[in-house]
Length: 150
Image (tube, rainbow, N blue to C red; front, side, top):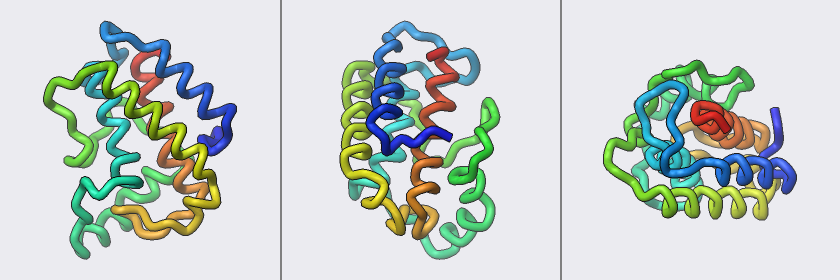
């Protein structure tokens, strides 16, 4: 799996994002391109902002037991996978706004680097290694950019 913390991979992903436009259609799924960009921003909102509530103890236990390996493991996501409620984007979003937000999050993540994330607690899964953070960030982006043909 590529390392999102490296400048080269970050620039590659940003290039893929810049190949999208407001009219880009998905190869599968129901989200519009602007909704997909907003959806991808949620992972970074959870890492950098106090915007989403922390799941309660029981929910975190369930997430760690049943979801964590899928999210931070090496296996790619299946097409049309179910998503957590916090990641559902059903309203209209502005394409340019969401594109700029996602690119800014990517740059911030790369600038902070692996050491910033190693052992850092995620909102849903507890402490993660930098490899697990990388898998969560990169695999999700790659899945959705592939969904939109870039």
